[in-house]
Image (cartoon, rainbow, N blue to C red; front, side, top):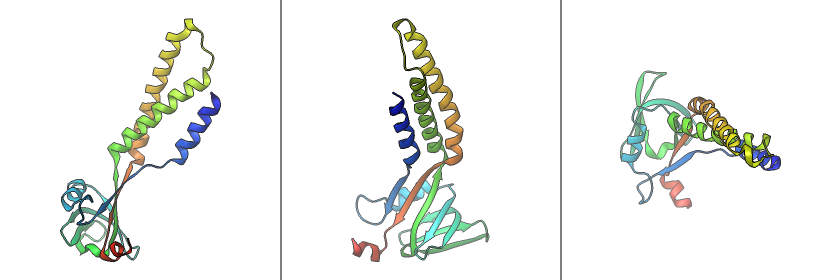
Length: 165
């Protein structure tokens, strides 16, 4: 039982979750409207094709360009969509939910690993401890997940990248 717990912890620490979307005019890819709906009110990290990184707010995508407000320079700026490599956002609420879920699972597995001997008369106490540690761990994991966040990445496929595929 303890071996299974150790394997879970290693998998938990190695696994990194994020969402990644491709923005292009092709069917099945994320549309301009979907991007703008998600970007509304969010802070973003814009990475240009030349690897320049820009922190931005008020990000707006048109059919051929990306516009944003740069809080450092206090200027509105825009570039052609072909010059954008990706736009990164951090979703705090999904991060909190993920943190709560991971915390709950880790707490419950910890309880199982520590209390591996069970007699029939102790079943109710065992399950109560399992639920309690799961809830407590979820309450600890939620604010940690809010702080860390959940990465959401929008990749922009320009004409040169599309030809390579």
